[in-house]
Length: 124
Image 1 (cartoon, rainbow, N blue to C red):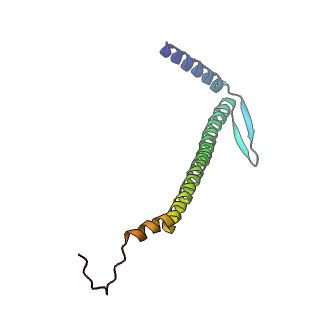
Image 2: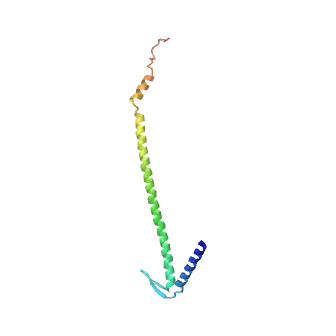
Image 3: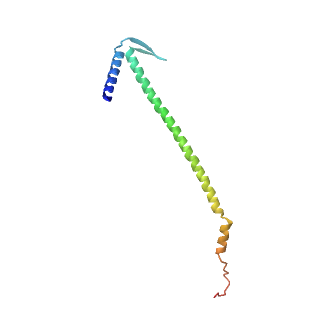
């Protein structure tokens, strides 16, 4: 079924293209700053369609690249914010651990018995 539809579309396109090319009316082409030589209307239509499709594809690719860059910038901004928050939490944790709590100092102080290096008495 797909093959039949493809053949029909190809035949319709070929017939339409033949009608356009068969139109031999000469028209003068006045561009914005210059005058192009006179050409057949069919050739002018085909050339116009081809250039329009080409320019449309190029603009679509350019626009897609712009949107792709915006999406990438947004994703990287979110990642940057997340990493900054993680860094801030890590810095807070480092400060907390480096200051030490009084309970830690008390335990450390009690665990070190005071030994006098001059004391010569022998404990039995």
